[in-house]
Amino acid sequence: MAQSNQMIETLDDCFFKTADNIMKYYVNEEEKKKTLEELRSILKESCSESARILAASKIKEQLELTFDPEAKNVEDIIKEYKEAIFNIQVDLSEYNRLLEYDRQIEVLHQANEDTPSNELDDTDADLQLTGLDINVIDPISKTRMTNPVKNAACGHVYDKASLIAMLEKNKNTRCPVVGCTNLTYIDLNQCRTDIVTKTYLERNPV
Ligand SMILES: [Zn+2]
Image (cartoon, rainbow, N blue to C red; front, side, top):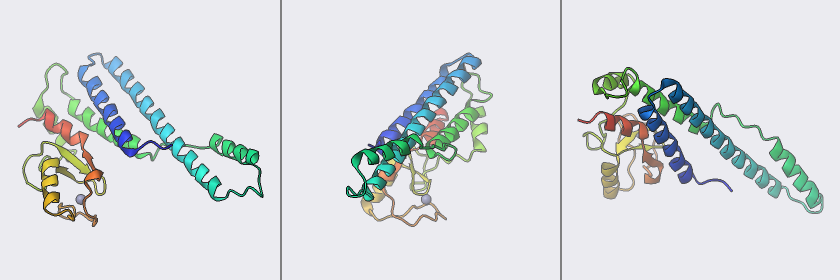
């Protein structure tokens, strides 16, 4: 059975928070690096498992579609299924979860660079992150966000409270960001906490 998206999202947030904590609290650089590598390999394993489960259920569906008890006996079908599962090849190079994680970690690294772990220098973090194009202003209310959520359909980020208020007024609303090419209505279920922006906001209080 395939894992639900919700579960995977929660899991990915945990991975990111754990990485954030490792970066914040490990003093020894060598240990920090090693622990982060371990964490990434666990995530990779989890991605690989999800991809296998998905591939296996597709194989099963395919076999069910072509199932003909007259032509083949059940043992042969099971054998075919097992062989197909054994031969599943997983390519993680374009796997979104892993790419997104690496992107988030990159942002964290940049935020932590040149910042001594015992004193958080916001100016440095600010300078480092400017180049990463982190937007803290909510496109709906034009004020600083407190709870940024990212629309999976187009990648734009809004403040959750103003998004909900906007959708309550009119549930058929498109992304308000100027120039956004996504023409579908905003689906609140597709908007989840944007950890990168949230972390940036927390580290750079007004
Ligand atoms: Zn958009």
